[in-house]
Image (cartoon, rainbow, N blue to C red; front, side, top):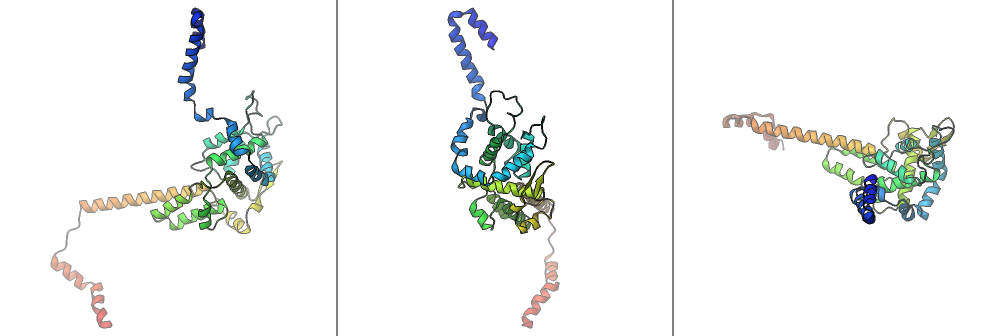
Length: 316
């Protein structure tokens, strides 16, 4: 510890520099080199390489009005001493209402985007510093999309006749419900859930934003509102989508809804396999006694099926 280093250096002043150097090496080797990777990441590297680009900027500006409205609405839900703060709790609510939580995107992933989306300040204890500003909110969204949101492949969406993520997940949920009797069908659905490696970040941000607006519109029946704010998002749904999705309690418009169905169907197949195996083992352990040759022959000759077969040639 620091006290021991100072004590040794005071006792051996001629070796003070060596003692300090050894202590620093120990600190680096035993502690600093074992820190999580995220702690060592340069926040500005993501901003320079991915966030501060014209394409991403255009994707965000296209929906600035609705993003700004949702930011102010969530930040104003629970004012703190009169200040509107977009805290971690509000961010989690936003991600949840956007229909983004799933197997790959957990609360931990959402928290990661929140933390790294904030600018660094000397005094991190101040409440306004620990919340998202308007600009940090936009960065957190882009970080979340880049790291944690899997956007479907364009060819898969085209194959299912879908232009947006919400209807794509609805189509997949329907496919699992109707055609989920075979393992090949389930494997195909899982393939559809894979990330598209060819989509640009700006394209993914655009698709996820529309997906988020649609799920907000579904959950809040077109208008997200509090006592002081309201944001209209119903126009992100077509008339047909309103009829389908607003008439049911939980429409299947999220990745999580597909994953739940896949889990249920997979468990169903496992249970069926266990039952089939148990039946085979029981049959091997207690085989049915074979019928006597004369009985078997008489049974076949006297069966209604054999009469029909015998009458068939004559009928022709």
